[in-house]
Image 1: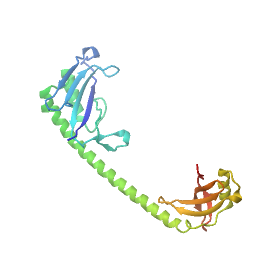
Image 2: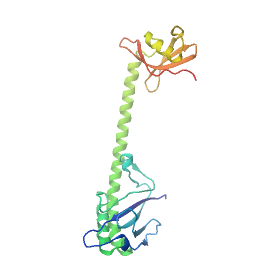
Image 3: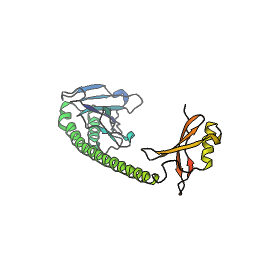
Image 4: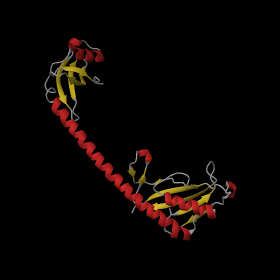
Length: 239
């Protein structure tokens, strides 16, 4: 089964009497015995960051994904990193971050194997379970929203089609100004421009087809209350 990772760097800042500085950080890499290459921790100093950091990477099964704020809350399932630190609020993994803060403040290192298995991992798994429920609910809500939006768009298109069907057929009357617009774009004599027909598109637009000395010109058009073409969109000529 394909797997995805949730990498959680926990940046820890120690105040008061802890006296931890970048020079006191002894870099240490720890691999936990979960039989997974992504299950590890790293403790050390980081340039242009807080004095010392404990970085723990947890494994996430396929499909659990994470919430990406840059995609406006949409759930994605791909390899990625979700950053949590003790000095920032994170409602989803606050207990995990709090345990790390307390542990590292006391021990000046990341949790060892026993601390990981008996304390850190159970806290994380509990929060991860709650977080997954939140994500599943988010997925369900967004799918329902997309469904409602699609239904609303289809209703709007259907209403527009019904309204356009009254006029968007054959070769209706047209204001001279529209003919002049077509001639101006094509740089042809207005007397040489002839409306041949109008067609309705799948997205409920009415397209007028004009015959000109330069070939067929097309433009979306609108109608007055009496069904006369009285406005047009961009005019396109053959290239």
